[in-house]
Image (cartoon, rainbow, N blue to C red):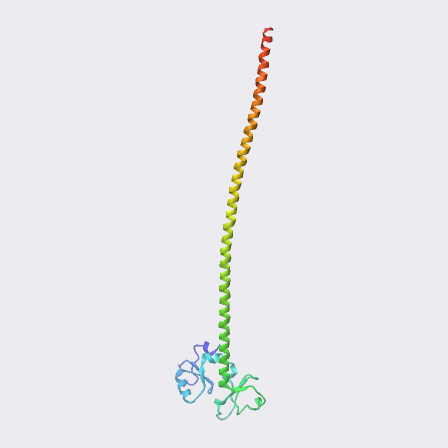
Length: 215
């Protein structure tokens, strides 16, 4: 858990019997979390202090590197070795870093981490803005597709309706044409059948006198 995530981190410099103050800062000289009241005292001693939230963004070795000096050394002159990723005291641990070239004060290291964090934040903001732009563009495209889909639906319904009207008109014409033809055929057949009936009736009438001869 990071220091800023814990709401129970107490000040490391207040008297233990009276320590009820929540730590809000980190002292690089004392390598302890400190409260707001102790911050004023440490600033008066020219200690390097940053907020707990800023300390969370830094490499662990930058804020917690040990010093093995028996006597009180100049802890405000701690250095940070980028190659070994650790801070060291120039008095008691010089041998290990004698050939290291990427060495700087912890103040510069802390500033570099802060600058890197700023770059990362800016990059994240840019990416989020790009994502939002892409999402909005996608939403706009889908809305246009939806509008086009609705228009296509209207066209299809219109074509179906027009086709049905054309079919109805054609069927009406076909019905009228067939009806007229049937009427003509019926009239022709009726005329012929009527003639046949008349002819047969005439012949039947001619046979009646001969039938009377046998009665």
